[in-house]
Amino acid sequence: MSAVELILLQRVEKLGQMGEIVSVKPGYARNFLLPQGKAIRANAHNRERFERERVQLEAQNLKNREEAERLSERMHGLSVILIRQAGDSGSLYGSVTTRDIAEAATQAGLGITRNQVILPEPIKQLGLYEVSVALHPEVSMQVTVNVARSEEEAERQARGEEIGVEQDEEPTLAELADEGTPEGEVSEETAVEETPAV
Figure 1 (cartoon, rainbow, N blue to C red):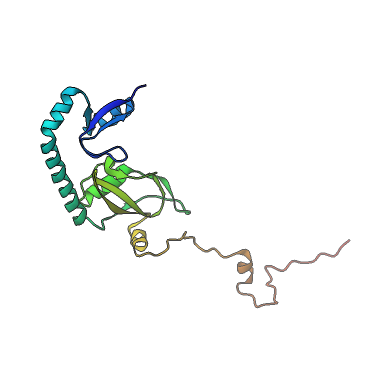
Figure 2 (cartoon, rainbow, N blue to C red):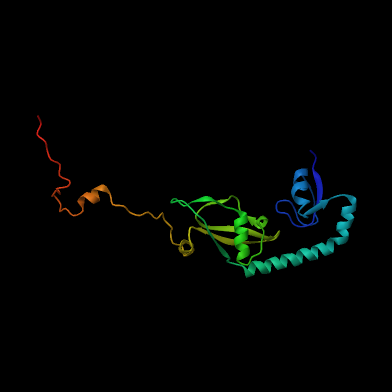
């Protein structure tokens, strides 16, 4: 397949800056860049239109970037708590996805969508995680995601305490046998009658 030429309407990570003409695979253009409004086809009509509207687009981009920077400063240090069920080893029953993080961040006052959350892979263990959120193509921020089984456990994790596996200690058989009998003595219950050999 041949590459498709597009004019970028905003900065796209690992591709280019606003106004650049780039060549991409048809599927990437058709499924991502064009529907999201990040680019337009690089034909003669669109090139003329882009040059006419370039100043307005750059001004709008600058305004959006400044708003994103202000939001990033205001929400600096944001931490969200996600309560999930997990096994004794700390493995979650299910996983935490970008949608879960976006919903929790929105409830905390940072209105974002799941597409803005950059999560290399779903979270499958209890713990604290630093997750990037792209507020603008040129502005991102870190959000601390605290995944715990309860509010109390989340507070302990946030303080830096190690969350171990909580197990009820059951006495061993040796401990049960030793209870109540002084050393060297054998209780009547545990004594075994010797039967003479016939």
